[in-house]
Amino acid sequence: MKRVDNVWLVNLPEELRRALDSLLKEENYIIEPEKSPTILIVGAGLGVSSMPLMDAEPGSWLAEVQRQFLDLFHAIQITVPAMEGGGRGKVIVVTTDVGICGALDSSVAGAISAGVISATRSFARELAPRGIIVNAICGGTILREAADTKSTQITLADPWATAVATIFAIDQRLRSLVGQVIVCNDESTRSRT
Image (cartoon, rainbow, N blue to C red; front, side):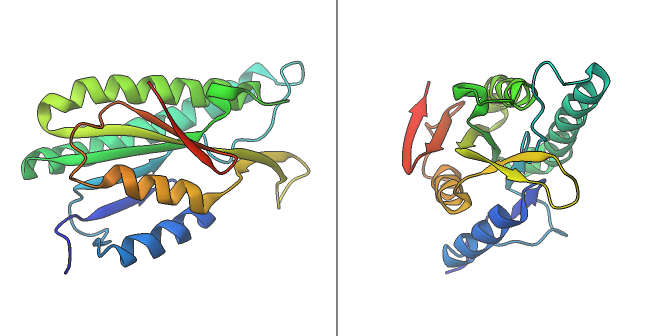
């Protein structure tokens, strides 16, 4: 049976997108970018370059922070009117656990992730009266060499586990899971309140 929920996937790393595509199809969700969404899964703070605190140039990290937040706010602002028109919706913001746990040479990524988590909780409070539920999924991370540069990027350690947690969070039967942060780290999943 096809579900009535149309899912938009925005700003997600390719490995996570592939895992989500597979799971969404398995669960009979609709993925049609040309139609209005009832569910938005948006990445923020993913694939950020590792920048040690003492090496980070203020202009470069400020530009990264601005880009990450502008993309997140823009994706939500575009989709919320369609969700309101349908009377309901879900927004899942996918970020990293670096904003909760910290990581070596990752102060910029940690600041972005922590800000994304805080913003997600505020979005949840603001949008819940409109029938839109907002939660966050924080995937565990590893440092990986960037393909096109000599820098390292903070990437999801287990995109599949992050995708499974995301599928759990979009279930429309979970109406009371609002403003929560689900952390997927080291093959364990726990909720942060």
